Amino acid sequence: MDEKEAAKEIKDRFSDFGVDIPQEDIEERLEKLTSKFKVPMSEARRSVTNYFLKEYNISRGEFYGSQTETPLVNVKDLVEDGKWVNVKAKVLQLWDNTHESISQVGIVGDSTGTIKFVKWANANLPDVEENKTYYFRNVVVGEWNEKFQINLNKTSSIEEIDEDIEIGTSSVTASGAMVDIQSGSGLIKRCPECNRPLSKGACPEHGKVEGVYDLRIKAVLDDGESVHEALLNRELTEYIGEITLESAKSMASEALDPSVVLDYLKEKLMGKYYTITGPKLDRYILVETIEQQSRFDENELDELIASAEVV
Amino acid sequence: MAAFVREVAKRVFAQEFKESNLMFKDGEDQYSPQYLLTPTGAKVNRLFIVGTLTETEDIGTEAEFLRGRVSDPTGSFLIYAGQYQPEAAQVLSECEKPAFVAIVGKPNTYTTDEGDVITSVRPESISVVDGDTRDMWVLEAAKHTLNRINSLDKDEPNIKKVVEHYNTDKKHYYEMVQQALQSLKETD
Image (tube, each protein chain N blue to C red):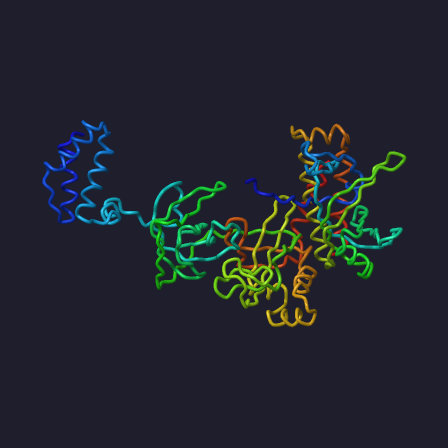
């Protein structure tokens, strides 16, 4: 591409913004950069464009932004590492933050699926809350641990929108014996600001706060061939543990120790067989239904007896 | 960052567990996990057992050290719990016997002066369960054991090791499984 063509393009671009620059001026600057200063054409164009942007006080964001509009992409299509996108999604879950350079981390989803998001601390973006829908602009898709996530950085923006999104997820079913209930289960306290579980009475983000009580179970189901980690919310914990938040609180205050609730749940649930369903997000299955399996299948017994005959 | 993978709890009948004596390490590192290879080729670093706790005995000299026997349709497991398994030890000593219990634990071997290998289980957790759960475990253990017997011809390093070491008699283990399954029929 020679200076004339390049100059014409730049001129046209600027005229979109109501600025008429004489073509000769553009050509002259391009010419000077490419011939005299041996700058490659692409770099020269960039430099000249920036010069006129400054000269006419046009916002770079607007100028370039409208040129290459970041596409609004459905969550299930976020599968290209390094792609810049806009996403309209609901925050489903905020996780315990594990690193100081991360401000918030969790799961967002729309009608097509769910994806992990990471809001970096140096992005200086406002905090998001669970169960609210946001328009995330200019976020970048990244691949980490062989999974895709979206990263919110300095150039991203978050806008809360008053709209509820129905989350579409592929639900999984898993069965197995409950072989462990992990620490952080039972009666816990959450931060009233961000809903994160408190550790030693303090929120990693908001420091010492008056926590809000909650019940949950982080369970491990094992079927002898693979293990599934499952997260049960308060409602399911109350159901399967035959306990209520209120009774858990009085158990804890009677014993002056909240860990008695975890002990109770372990005693009640461990070693028994369960079938769970729910979407799998990262490590955990977010359990939507849980039932204890209480009886083996007679047909399966007969089949096994028959196959054990083959000697 | 390599993700930590939790060891799966294998289902093995007491008889097969008792007849196991091949321990090996997966890797050279001192922190490499240890496995017990059973005669049907289960590679066991963790076990899940449901059976009947029939008796416990404190065999500790100073501190409490409990030995429990948990029986399934084929035999019984020896369970040892001491000060490092306080929760499991508490259940062992406090629960009424006999009782159906579910145990998650690690396999252990001990070689006697005569050179015999005794296998036992060091529990991570013990909980009291019901008879239905126990029956489900028997069925599950039978299913897994059958799958392993049927895979003994596979050309895999661990399987070869197993066949070479135990010279596994498939018929012996088919009979063990059959006996366990028949016991479920009788209780109907």
